[in-house]
Image (cartoon, rainbow, N blue to C red; front, side):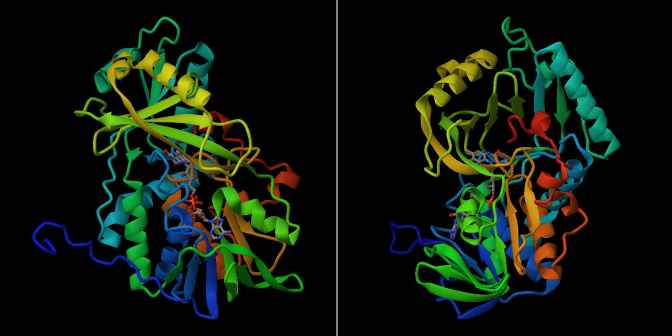
Length: 406
Ligand SMILES: Cc1cc2nc3c(=O)[nH]c(=O)nc-3n(C[C@H](O)[C@H](O)[C@H](O)COP(=O)(O)OP(=O)(O)OC[C@H]3O[C@@H](n4cnc5c(N)ncnc54)[C@H](O)[C@@H]3O)c2cc1C
């Protein structure tokens, strides 16, 4: 379809841009994947549609459309396996539900082991996954080469001794996920209020009754915070201290190439992970920049180290040209697991701390956060993820599975 013979017609409108009402049953802060999925499941599972999602920038302009799109559920601990695998099962049906194609590609994820200790840890994780009903296999170097021929398993510095393989894992197009969720939410009556920053909360004693924004207050029966790296800027206004640190996290993409990379490869040891996007770019991810910051940019030395590590494992990458790099602001907890639950303030709930790995959880996080907001109580899947674990000591330490979490 063309508008004037030359210019393609603009796409069909996906969502409205309404003026906010004075009050909503639920206000969600942040139109990233988690805010969108929460709104979607509030409407779908709980019949709550009087919802505003308030976003300081543009819909999906945070980490949602900056991530490297890796989806997997092979975490070590029972609580994590249950939460992330619930998300993976939802991914498998979500595009049909939304009637919106976002190219979920279950091409498999290899997690490499380069030392004997890594082999032991990885095999332990694969066994734990199997016990939790999460698909996991242990592959020898020859089996790895069959799946990913461009990976150099005999590199003298970082020989590949084996890998765990999750076949159901893969990638999906993150921007399309956001648009599909937003379109469906809009159809169900959810208001998206973009370019409006939430600056604090309206309270009545220890009850939250609305949000303050840079253009006036909006009343709310309940407020769900899904603000990722900027969460503590808001919780600090109430004196609620969360154990979160915000860091830049970078990624990079090459020019568009023929399909050469058939799966996703992650190596905690050399600290690189790679895949090939649907369009053809090689997508490479790094670890966090170690400094704290809110800027959506990071340091050049991280990119240099990243590329050196990638070429070490994939010599063929040396011939590719880097086209762009970018960064998001991720919120990291001490145990590399998220915080999802109530707060000391009545009617205020948080979903944060997903660090470098929350894209994969998007539908699952939305599902349990919607339940928490709708009922005022955690869903059994997010019960272990409350903020009180940092005082009780019941941590969910996923540093092993999440060192390069993506
Ligand atoms: C480079 C990079 C690569 C990554 N790769 C992966 C990966 O491969 N797989 C994976 O699982 N995860 C990955 N992640 C992590 C993942 O992107 C995040 O964990 C996830 O997107 C968090 O979802 P969210 O909706 O909470 O965050 P966001 O998408 O960041 O949404 C938060 C939103 O809140 C808005 N906001 C913040 N403060 C306010 C305020 N005061 N008022 C109004 N709005 C506000 C922000 O503008 C933002 O849009 C990656 C992240 C980055 C940066």
